[in-house]
Amino acid sequence: MSTRLAPKHQRLVLLAIALVVLIAAALIAAWGLRSQASYFYVPSDLIAKPPAPGQAIRLGGMVQKGSLKTDADGVTIHFMVGDGKAHVPVSYSGIVPDLFTEGSGVVAEGRLAPGGTFVADNLLAKHDENYVPRELKDMTEAQKQAAVQETTK
Image (cartoon, rainbow, N blue to C red; front, side, top):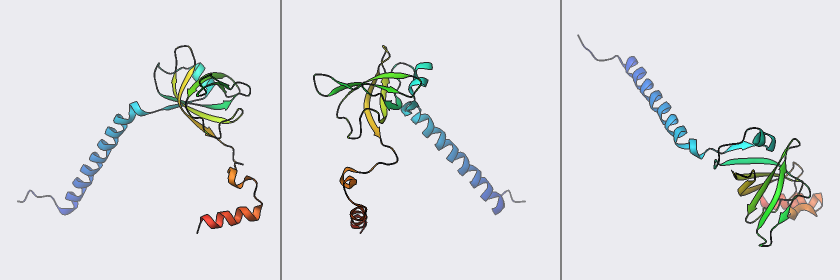
C-alpha cells in the first residue's frame, strides 16, 4: 500500500501552502507599515478627537481668508484651516506650492503641537475641477487643442 498523495491532493496541499504564505506576507507587510500610516483629519475631527502627541497625520480643509501671515524670515507662514464647522491654526516653514492661496484647499502633513497648533512638514495645495495650467490660461480653444496635440505626438 502506497502512502503517496494522489496528484489531485498534491495540488490542493500546494494551493493551501501558497495561500498561507500569501496571507502571512500580507500580515507582515501590514504590521511593518502600521507606524508609517498617516491618518487624515478635517479640523472638526481633529478638535473633537485629537491624535496622540507626535503622531503623523494629514489635516485637510480650506485656507481661511485673511488668515495667511508670513514671518519676518520670509519662509515661515501661519494660517488657519477650516471645514465650515471648526478651524485649526497651522504653522509651516518651507517653500509654499504655487496653488496655495487663501480660500483654496490644502492638505498639510505634520503633527499637532501641544498648544493646539498644527506644525506642517509638507503642504499639498488642491485645485478645483476647473483648474487650467498657467500656460493654457490665456490661449484660445484652438490654441489649447494645438498645444495638447503637440504634446501627445
